[in-house]
Amino acid sequence: MTPQQIYQLLNDNKIEYQVVHHPAVFTTDEADQYVQNYSFARTKNLFLHTHNRKNYFLYILPEDKRFDEKSFRQAVGSSRLSFASSDEMSQILNVTPGMVSPFNLFNDRQHQVSLIITQEVLKMNELIGVHPNTNTQTVILKTTDLLALLEKIGTTNNRSLVFIEIK
Image (tube, rainbow, N blue to C red; front, top):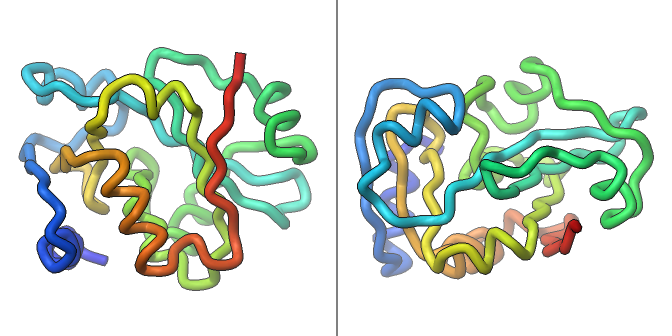
């Protein structure tokens, strides 16, 4: 989906949102300099796969937290993990590195990716900022609206939407 299609989907579902336009960003640190005057949960999105590439995960965690593979594996019951390659990002989510976002799940036509969110993200702020399939914009919306929309349009069919608590 293009950013315009995402905005149309948000509008059609009567979801309130705000868009911040900025230069292309590839890290949370880069993005933060353009959205520092806005209040929302600051997160990072990791696109992971199991060693055998049978399971893919989009993992959303607070931007200041380190990825703890062992705790993540225990929480979701998976085998050893690796970060997905840029080819996998392109083929599965139709995205390049630096642009991974929950909105990319709209592009996952085969429903290969499980969305995993830490409970901490849900407690940080009622709003979240995510890229609308481009890294030159940030969409700020309620986290509950984002999750409801993902579920409503079927991106969670045949996959899990899991909220985990990682110490």
